[in-house]
Length: 252
Image (cartoon, rainbow, N blue to C red; front, side, top):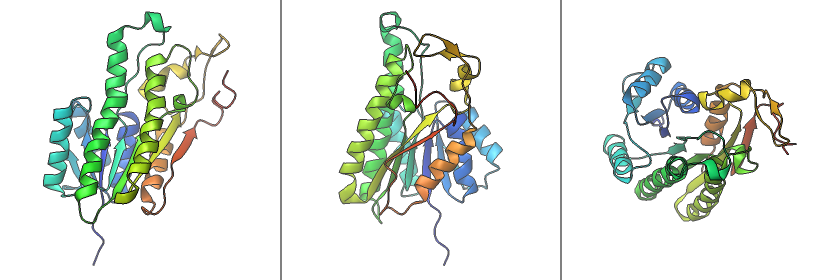
């Protein structure tokens, strides 16, 4: 008897790393729930992946809205009855600036999506994974190398990503009794729209402006798929995947 396909949820699946990862999971035989605020880009991801009918489920949702997230997980439970993987990927940034030039509304937007959104989705996934049978599952949070070292003028983004590391560690601890594993992928300079400025030149810690190398988003998707493929008895707590020659190791 063939093993039942596993169920994955990818947030921010309408573009960039989310789109690439959702596609990689579909190609690997997973059933994938794709979510994001706008339905059209999610449907475009499904079309680009050439997914078979029933393998992809599009559920538009705002990860920063508790009611929207509750509805998302209710739909997953209704359709599939379980969830094996959450890739907490949805994220936002704000233009670089010193802290006193950053509007409070911009701070709240970044924190609401990057941190509160990850909390809400992890909360929904944890609850479903805890009560489903067989119990358990895996949560992978999209961190960033900004979880370790900031770029100049990046207070909202860097603070949110440092907080994601705390979320990851606590979920990894709290999930143990329920066979829920949690890990984090810290990404440096993947070739997404958010990272497009790196190819043109961005401020460095020494005050200079420098062009930085980018890597293909497929490399990130493959890394997430590897993390997800492990048995629940094993876990990659933190993985850094980055453009080899980007200025991170010697940043500052």
